[in-house]
Length: 138
Image (cartoon, rainbow, N blue to C red; front, side):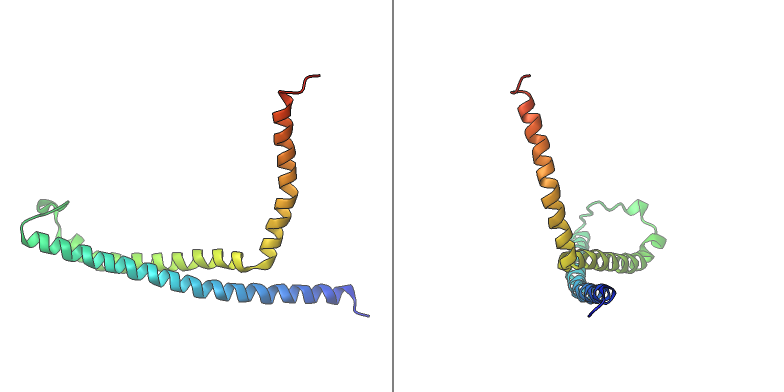
């Protein structure tokens, strides 16, 4: 006879293995989505930079004031670009990984459906009661 304690341990083991598989899938999806996001934003940056340089050669300066330009601020731009890119990449990977992990985890969906089956009748009965209160008189 298998004790209930061993059954609970097996259930926990299965849940831990399932969430680790879901986290792995979420991490892979997060890395791919962040790489696509990063690539598209870098391509957009390069295209915008090229457009502004070509316009500057023709004497068109959009949103660019030569009198306010400081060499010190322009020299720190690569550092800002790299640090912001790394932070954005990390945030996108973390957020997408968490979302995909939750969406992949079966216990999450069991909790959601149980909440739906519990809360929907309660909410419907409250709404119906409020709707019928105006039509039913004592």
